Length: 190
Image 1 (cartoon, rainbow, N blue to C red):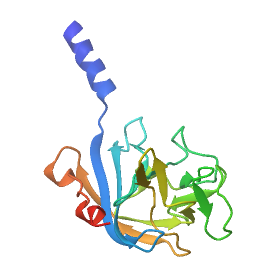
Image 2: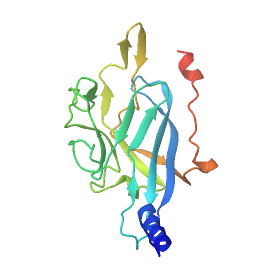
Image 3: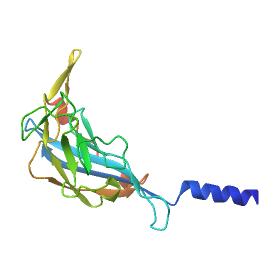
Image 4: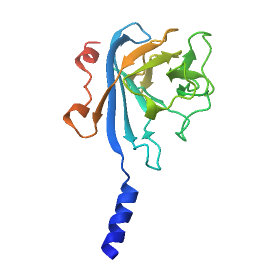
């Protein structure tokens, strides 16, 4: 009986989720107009409809080749989501970003990036196949000084039209789940 209880507790706590890695890589330009690869990635746990838990996902990471700046797009389910609006968004950081349409400094109340801009109730866990990514900010300065080094913090160019990004989904831990790497030789050439 004790063994049966332990097995029941173990099955309830582990859940019935399927775990996935999601990623996309596409060519675009950074705010300086340089050709760069852009990579999006996140993890998800998908539960069956009959299970008591809802699907869950991490924030979407948006990375730009040759840049140290990493954006994290979060939805309402994420406690670290900013207060810059609804949907899957990343808020501006004071002193680091400019709101492209106005040219003014972006604050924590300005959405700099939003996934699925036409759906204010969008959630990361529901994204599948493709997503639209709208970028409305540019870096205040594309490089910052760190001691003797200059660090690149430039990112995907702002656009009034969303980028359409096609996403791969693979079971976590499988060979297909391995994200593509950036070609760092493009950064060394500069």
